[in-house]
Image (tube, rainbow, N blue to C red; front, side, top):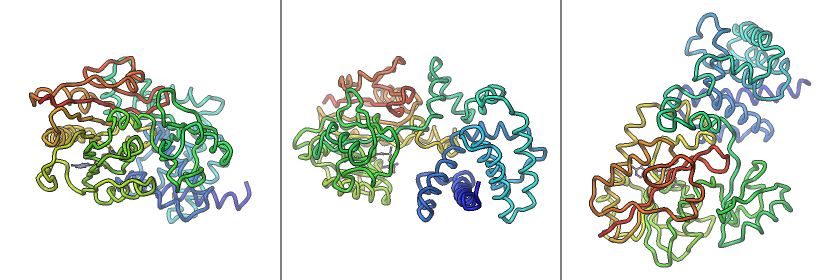
Length: 449
Ligand SMILES: C[S@@+](CC[C@H](N)C(=O)[O-])C[C@H]1O[C@@H](n2cnc3c(N)ncnc32)[C@H](O)[C@@H]1O
């Protein structure tokens, strides 16, 4: 490896370390840290992203692998040093970078830091680790791990929750969560068709994409690309959106003249999709976060749509509602996001078991308050990107007991064809296991009177 390559690798490693510290020490989300890679070379930025996503994706496993080599536990102020070792073990186990180059870069990174004292320790730990795994395949090394957390690379409470809810498929779900999600686009059918768009992609950007049978607007790219390198982004030809999220607008079936409330709208993916299906609708896009609502505005502007934007708490209806009932309501409620871990691996480290009960209460309040804003005969679509029954089918069971003017409706064929083998009492649960969609839950409720 030349000196120049080494410097490049150290720049990316330092940025990755900063990102990881921000997530693990300060509790920030990966998606709020993209600016940290803005001012470095694109190649370094890609490498830093690969390292930080990789370490978070396999965090519990990497910790399990490192632990036997650390004689005296490191102090919490030395998390930065621990991260250098975790990044190296990630590279050794999950990438093709030669082992000697990984150890060399890790030790150099520490030597160039203010903690030179740790360089020999890092060198010793990584060399001992390499010696012990010599000649073994990574899968064999992982199979020798004894704790479930380390084997499945998830915190124990998530493993236990999924085991309880999905006793036949929890292992498949955990394995799927550890895969990298594909980059999936939603093609704006007001502008172009999926066929035409895929042809333009192949011609202009040399990226192949596949359609998802039964989902008219989805294109799954074979390799992820910066959206600005793909044809027609500024012209609004497409948006980035997981295939599983694209069912919301299809189930809502916006009809000309409909008044629709999207009560947890930011960043606006589902709002925009409803407009794409039927531009002649009035959509109120509400979100509690003003900064996230700005993204609804930007996304809709790029696509040429104009929702009514409201920054408010969906529970505090009296603060914003003008008294006119809605034909349809979309509640894409805040949730544990257990279904999108493959896209957001930081969830494994940031989400706490205690959060679930608070989220369940919040979802119930949002459901109850917004039900009153629906016209008799109107439909409300309840959506989460969770896999936990407490946030999904059990919420619907609870709601059916709370009000007497509700009917749980069958969902349309467009989604039932994706129904999994694991039945739910209401709605449809999608899982990330087949690689096509993230995990989503959909339930449709009709106001009977
Ligand atoms: C799952 S995201 C919505 C994604 C969005 N529907 C889309 O497709 O782009 C949930 C949203 O709920 C918002 N939220 C959380 N608590 C809320 C509340 N009490 N009232 C309104 N919005 C809330 C969050 O700010 C977040 O933007």
